[in-house]
Image (cartoon, rainbow, N blue to C red; front, side, top):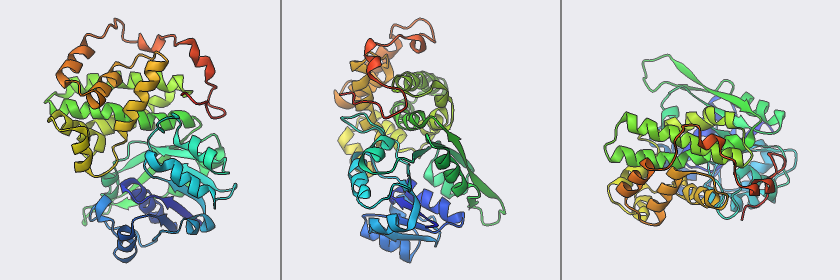
Length: 368
């Protein structure tokens, strides 16, 4: 079983499959889209999600999930968080306990507040699970830009095996005259919860950064937003069992900065369009792909309200997205938020309800 599986043919799933294939791996990619399947197998492109970028011929697309589980010892699951449990349930029928499952989805499940690794452990017999996250704009990686990520897991085997898969992944630079090859560098972390939450929560702040860009606010204002946003991510993450240091790494600050300042980010784009007065529904239809930050904002807001965790930026964005509050009113409210010292939020003693949550081992209890 020397093949590697990827479930999901979106822009990040396709990019991960291509990275693995450029490292000499035979990749089996499972997709539900017949048109994507035909295009990838016949023309080695995925124009809907990765444009005209050529993809490795070592990628074989299939609609048969069992083909992935029968031939792959490591499987990357990269589908929207809204269908992650459904896909994991299907995966659970054919996967074996000795296989490694790695989530590449940056989201939190609505209703349970569980991360994707939690879902994989609940819906399958696999215990060796991990999460791949970091500052990864798919189009930039496919065009030959150097990049990196972090794989989080409680298992050293998972960390080392995933790092090994990408250890010599190189993407030729888009300039035909260049001989440069840039590696995709992967680091490891034992803080699985922190790696997952950093990748999910940063999408909230990215929407806010997009709004700021759309309003014409410049670097000072956006840096102000991003820095205070990192504080909110850390507070909620630590409450849910993550280590605060993880939010200073690739899956936290790294992903946050990239998503907040890149015009290629879906969440950033969503925020810019929102600042133009367009409705949430119209924007989602226009983008045509899942914008995880919209759903994560609602989930994070509900947790912060229930457990009295100060998250004013998240609260303001929730009001804009779900209560149709004015952007200008919310912005003024944020600047009037009653905080005197910069580190005040980090020292907050949370409600005693925190004792209901166990630490990172095993899976935290339901919050609702």
